[in-house]
Image 1 (cartoon, rainbow, N blue to C red):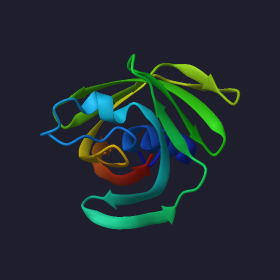
Image 2: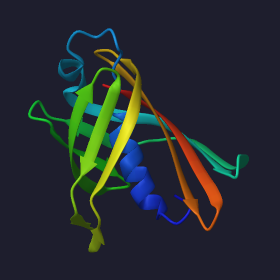
Image 3: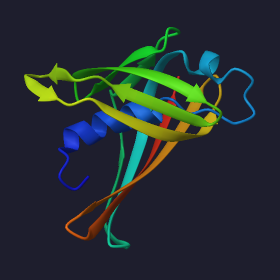
Length: 148
């Protein structure tokens, strides 16, 4: 995560944020279909359990489009990223295939997001990822809020 370009993290975050759902939603995928405007995104980075950075900013112009066939696109900073998604219970899984974005080759990724809220007009997603590099544990949490 520390070594991942911020652009890719933002794109993945936008995708993740747009796919929240409650456990008790009978058909969460029907609520997620449509265009979701990203309102806010808060990331926290930790190194060996110590908070090292917090980035909390309002977001304007970025969005995620979820289609009924399980595909979608995000626009983050004007860059478009294609993805596929599934929802199982309260977990949204976003799979971004390998693609070229603004002339940069991006490897395929898969990310799980906890759907904290998913209504017809509000979506709140949360992710918590860790990786270890040379014995150092890097952790990043991200909370994203969308409106339709």
